[in-house]
Length: 220
Image (tube, rainbow, N blue to C red; front, side, top):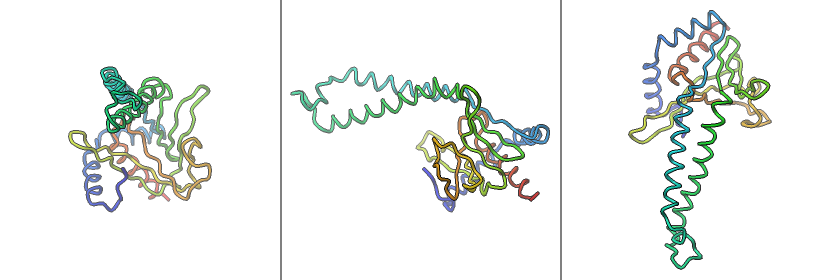
């Protein structure tokens, strides 16, 4: 869920995340930028397989529930039909099975092989994934076209912590988006949400991108 930038809770929590950033990690990235002219942020395979495992656990739990629940109780044509509330309850679980099934397959068999990554360079920011024959750009924007580096929160209920998502907003005319995920006709502004499945923590990435953009702006 997106929170408006003026939301006091959003602003306060964002500052807390920035304050907790690993300054040593950020400085290591700056050193790599000075040495190589680029920093490659790669996917964390542990996070990928953890997400796959969670999806498979939900799939297993839902299948078990269906296996112990007589089909006649949620079949409207059966004399043992348990009623429409039961029918819609089971329908929701059937949709959940489909959703978690797709997620389990994607996290287990697709995501580890396409290996998404984000490259931060002197030119700008580029996100890509792998396919046979080379890498495909998902998003790319030069620093001159980037107008904001910020963050959004996915508010979660206890005990799960709120999830920070780093955002990059750029002029549509200067940014590249893959046609499969973006519009063919470029909008005025494009907002890209950096993957949370990178090895780097989102707050470290946020601070690093903000500092690089600040330095690039100062040189203009």
